[in-house]
Every structure is written in structure tokens, then in C-alpha cells.
Image (cartoon, rainbow, N blue to C red; front, side, top):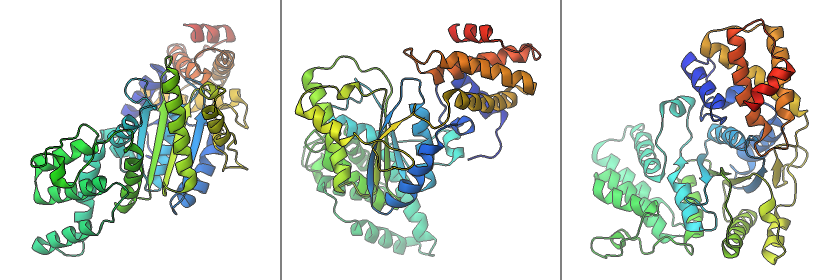
Length: 418
């Protein structure tokens, strides 16, 4: 993480947190608090050891809307990058990424695929998706061979030899696609590369044997029957490309409208199969996190509901990191204490953003009052953490104009309601 917080970055953090109440892609690290009891075991027990060494894991993150799910997933993404994992952060949407349509889930995973990124890359903007990922893979492999003093025709031979040595994955079409995409970059066949990338991104299948995908050895379309083999092949290829593995972060970012019984059954069946894939070892070097606002979708009386409930029944704790469910609300520290720490960290960011300095006593008492007022709203539709960060930024603006005026409990309640 960057050691020095610049004024521009600080202002960007304040705008994002104080406006929509969401964590920024970069900057969340500066006000993370209270979740080390989950993050430390995830890093020590999984990302730095088990998953990197060939293991696989599935975890369900449970937290209300505005309760810190996205922030938590960003933290895991940062840890995954630290340990050289490729990452795909996927916002689940009932229209664009419905989990009951597995082929669209695969499409979203590859559309959001990223290589391990530095803070500078996150800040400067970055390309995501399997097309960009392949280009980075090709560039890195080329530099690796060139570093040995190999150039010209010999370089070309070495790269061709390398891509031919890539083993067959479960989906032969996927195997042929990534091999040919690499060769297209080597031969500078841009149109062919785009054609292959189109298929890998699940944007269509051209069955014409002379002009379409079959001429690259791609012989099947991507649909619900081929989606899981494609995901398994993707995980293996990422490892072959030189990374520690793949971490996929599913974030249910909006309320799911009423679903038909069939759609609900398909969603549960797909999720159960994903949990089983992780359990059976067919997704080596991978970790899947599935964040949901509650467990209501597990409420049902059919066998599908019961089968999934049994698979996700165990609770993740520091003393039992093999548990599946992580409850973001069940922390060892008092919630008000965590809010106060977040408030203090946001205050430091605000001071950098606006070149101000708060009176310590005034700040501490004001943050405490806003924390208490926000926590009192914990039974509402929006998570109290989001309410707090939005309200505390408003409170900082008040203190900026009236540095000596403590925000009283009554004023804190007004900030929450406004």
C-alpha cells in the first residue's frame, strides 16, 4: 500500500465515501477497521499457504446492504494481489449477472479478470477482462525469455515452444483458444486475436468452418452445459500462466427481485455445485467468496434448499477458519468502538483532503456521538456502517466551518436523518 496519502487521493476517498457511501477501489485501506479477525486467517490459512499450494476454498460473506461487504471483498482482493493471485471481482445483478444463468456468470468472471495490481495501477485506471489478461501474459512471457538474452528468430521459437507445452485443460476448445490467442499476438494477427477473444468472452460462437471459430480448434459454444468446464479450465490456465491461482469475489450488490421457482432452484443448484467443486478438488488453486445481504434465499423446504444449507452451515471463526460463513456483524469488538476507529481514520483522510486540523477533543466526542446515532439505526434497511460513514463526513464539514463546536447527540441524530 502507498505510504503517503496525497491530497488528490484523499479528496477522492472523501467524495466516494461521503456521497454514495461506498468504498473506493483504492483508498479503502486507509479506513479499514474491525475485520482483521477474518482477514488475517484468510491470508495465513488460505492465500499464503493452502490455496497457493493447490487447495481450494469457498466462503459465504453475510452482511446487510451498506454493512461493509464490498469493502471486505476489496480487502481480500488486495491480499490476493499481494500473494500473486489473479482476481475477478463480480457484481451479481439480477439482469446482467444472474447466478441462475451459469454461462453469464462465466462471462462476468472473464470480463472482470485482472492480474495482480499495484496501488498505482488501481489509481491510474486499468483494463480488465480476459483479452487484456492474455496480452499481459504474452508481454510478461516475452520479457522473461528476452531476459535470458534470447532475441530474433530464437525468441520466436522459444515462445512457440512454450505455448505448445501448455497442457490440455478440461475444455479442449478453451485450450485451443488461449494457445491460438498467444500465437496471434506473436504473429501480429490482430483480427484473429479479436475473433478468439470474442469467444472467450462468451460473446458469440461462429460455426463457419472456414471463417469462424472452428478454424482455431474452437468447436463448441459457451452455454450452461459448458460453463463449469470453462471455469475449471480458466482456473488451470491462470495457474499455468504463472500466477498463484484465481480468486473470484461475487458481490450481490443490489436487491434481487422476485424470482420464479425454477430460477431460484437453478441458482441454488449452481451454488451447490460450486461449493461441491471446491470440496472435491476440481478447482485447485482457487478461492471463491460469495457475498450476500442475508440468508433468506436459503429458506425453503425442498431438497435443493436443504442440500445447500448443509454445505454452508459451518461458521468461519479465528479458531475455526475452515467454517464457510463469515458474519460481518459478528465481531469480537463492540460495533460502536469499530465505528469510532473508522471515524478517526476518515478524519485523518479529511484533514489531508482539505488541509485542515481538527481539535482532538472536539473530534473524539463528535465522532463518538455520530457513531452512537448511526448504530441506533442498525435495524433499518440500510447498514449502519454506510449511514455512519456518510454522516461522519457531513460532521467533518460542520467541524471544518466551526472547529470549536462539538457535534452533540441531537445534532448527530439530525446528520443521520438529513
